Image (cartoon, rainbow, N blue to C red; front, top):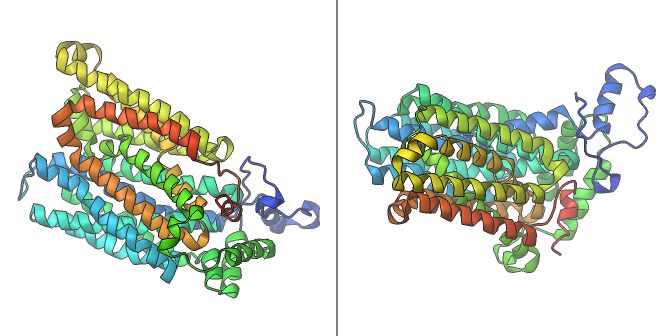
Length: 487
């Protein structure tokens, strides 16, 4: 069964559109007309629902990243079996990214060997176990172990989820569906902020386990991606999968042939050494560059230290409530992105986001500088500035830098290189996230917190030039067409 939805984006048959050019609504009746109209518009309910299930992986990742923000301050304010000092706080916030590094490296192998769907399924069960370890931690050391496990599963899950969504989506809807993963990621942040306001850190961990547990139940009912099945020469299963995704009235022959031709031209699974060849090295460097800007632009700092930063700012509003506002604005930003990214394009959003974030980081740094020079003036006249700046910054980040780097990873790399490429990208993101979150407090001790924000602003300025000079536009282009860009 399929549901009609107009993407608002015209596509041409040459760009992988699934529409039937001989569509005649009067030739069918009732439900059949409704279904055929849906196929004509390149959208199916089943593909969308399967994408939403995969999006739970992105939501789980957002939960892992943000957990420390409300949990760490709570550990020292509630009767607990242990207390955490400043050094331990930085490890609780960052150690999950070390687990994500190794999870991302293994993710590509699991995706290519077991499949996109099974690669996801292998991550969600230990994910739940990791949260149980966190919830029952009797000491900081055990808490570290739980955070490592959840980070490892995050690394396994994020790349696999994005590849899965990219490979089941019609070309005209791929941007929207991949952006839905970023909406889910930010929803994970919002989820933690809300429950972190209500629950102590250990019960918050229990609530965090609900999302991967739900995904474990639902992913079993979705199909493997047609591209992976054709890559493994399982044509009959690929046809069944694509027919399930596109609907029984859709003619899938053209799409199957296009995928087969692409796989035939590109050959077997890429080897690691091939990533030093220009046709894979160029897109990989673009991907790594975007992840670097994503992490060093400052948003990762907010996700881990949101409550602490707002407490330092001295605003009269409760720090946890400000975090909830920040999370809600992030959700709004990704929703805006989901409806504009296939119309406006990736490059325009990235440039606009970079400029906006640079201004916001600069303004936040100015506030903290004034707070050191003239605390009374900053508190009386400018106490609103950190919240407003960080809200606008989070919105700008959510519109572009949250969804697009993972989207570009799934779009620029050919099918045969997508597993390894996602592993490398995910591992690099984990390294950057660890460096930023682990050493933010140390850097702030050396150059003060305002200096740290100005460093982030400089990274955003670099992002403007990087996007203009290096990043290609991918909107409304099929994955098969994009595979030829760097040949």
